[in-house]
Length: 479
Image (cartoon, rainbow, N blue to C red):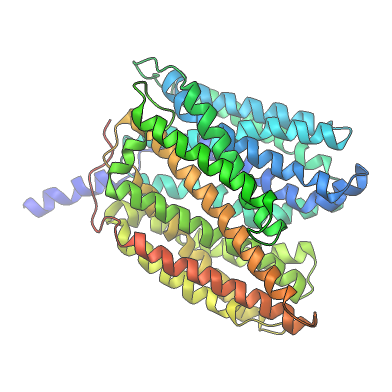
């Protein structure tokens, strides 16, 4: 009898509240525009250079400037959510991104386009961590795995489908339509958010903006991202154009750490959360997972283009199997993360990722495409297990006012890890190509094989912090 009474109760606990699902879908819809925009623009660089009569070095700032301002805006999101409430901050970030998109579509020269992209970056930087914070707070710490599986849809598919959509739009309509498509999406998202997201109460404690922390952490994050991006451009750490920004970024980050631990006011990012072994392990794992995911996302298209000689559009299509793999396990991994600890899921996912990357570490110019597509499906299926369960473990036991800090921290670690992984693998492949006496297809393939081995190495290293993650389901975040 006791078992019969327990079963329905357990099923009720595991059922995702329809109201929370509605909020999740609305928030994710709003995130589609910035996440797809940031990847679609990558395939437009050559077209922008031609149409705006500029150089690649200048037009590259359309991407770099966006990433830097996005990085500088991320730390502000936590304070803003606690001060004004998540719904208002989310709608504000959408409005800023909409304004940037409209202005970008009207850009008349490289300078105006770069300037308007900076505005877009501010909106995107505030939006993504705010989205996570609002959902976790709305759910009260329950069913975080399934919620994270919903959040992950645009994050995972953006880098894969974005270049395909960008290629189709640019070939058919022109580069301005990359920004035009953001306008209806963002307007609909704002309307849905206004009508469908319940108004949340800001924190009862009116937290003042930590200006000193903002002046230390935001530039530190942006300068570190810039310095890391320069690693591949200058082929390593030997150039002053790489070392100087990295040193400045690290000094500012160290200064923020000292300041945040000593200040009497509430800091922009509460570093005392790192006293939790699980929270620290979650952040380190997310950093290394970012290296594993973003590094390979850089290598895979380059392999298909430079080794296989495929077009940009066909290359994008060849990446679709990885997206299919992500979709296959997204919901299942989310549900499993709510029922069990994250340790075993992450470790198994890393092992499967290593196994599925091996075909690319041995790939040449004539490797069977069906084999590679199958490997991408398996790899995509495993990637969900590198982020969703770790995000769940990071929010374990946190109070409502601590959730924004956790969202900022995870976003910073994921972004820096992704940039670092991409920069290292790009540098490895360049060094390998530079060391080859002949630029044959075999030597080019060998250079990418070596870079894929490095990606496998990142996954092996990520197994270390994964061992510290919780091995069983823990209590949800506090309300």
